[in-house]
Length: 480
Image (cartoon, rainbow, N blue to C red):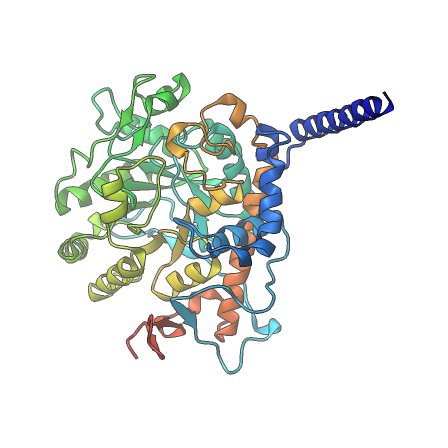
């Protein structure tokens, strides 16, 4: 009898403890996983915390996961949470490049803040009324409202303003949540021209002018292609096309939202230049082009047209590597189409230099550039700015569940289910977005200082060295 009573008391104690834990989990706002999956979510944190001690007994190293390995994700998580990123006992990384440190690195009193770079020109052919001074070399790349949840977009906008960086709308149009946080905005115009389209899907000057009237909208970006699916338009499943999304995009509700595989009114270099100039003339703001490098002859033809017709010249080119990501893409395109950023960026930078456009066209680099080493590498290779989408998703708590297109993202970042979205607290995640951006910039500056530079604007190809796999030697990016 006493034994039975003891068992009942133990069971009651366990039940009470579980109930208390459940109530704690659903009320806290710091951890989305615990809000959406109370009690059981603790198993993930246990595995994450103790995993580093147990991995020596398994055959899955930290750098083997795809598309982002555990080393990169852990660095982002720690940065976003504001905890130490110091490592012990040496590096686990297997780098493909390293930086050339200076014999006499920069002293603290010699360091200077990043001065920023101007995008757009104020006078001459191709000028705009309001050029934009980019004050951060690291910013948020395009993620469409609808592909991301409203809570995630709100967090990004708040965090971007707090960090002093810009965010791109992606091709899904400008939503109230983009503006609500106060961030500087890049309005992307995709092939379906969501948000600036007329009833026939053509560019509406009236709608474009209305969006440009928002002071926060600093630049416009014409999307030719994205890295995850060059030659294929955006895909938003019907389950995500709510009444709100349909109204913002100007499309039917509850139907798959599939963009054309290219702009129907841009079929050659001359038409591209004319479209760039039209958007800039109507908006009065800088205009860029997002592309994936494929046929390299196109670059020389395009840049030659820019030289001959300066009004056709874009203010920036956003180069997306073939390793770019998206919520939904055909596997054949995601796996095998598009030049990776490690090859694409040097190709575009070299073509820009051949045509003498270094001071006219800014280069943005994207494609898995989520950690300081990759951002610094891009700056060495000629990028003026680096933008990231998935890095900022991780900063908000994304766990790489690969459920983006289903609407069932367990962290609420790309969810469509209101219950899952409710677990993501925009106020908390905005702070994490800010911390991640700040930590990344700080560590890029540390790399610059170690190379003997006062700030990252001094990075050149000679500051980075490629490590050839299986070869006992080094070769810098100039081939030395």
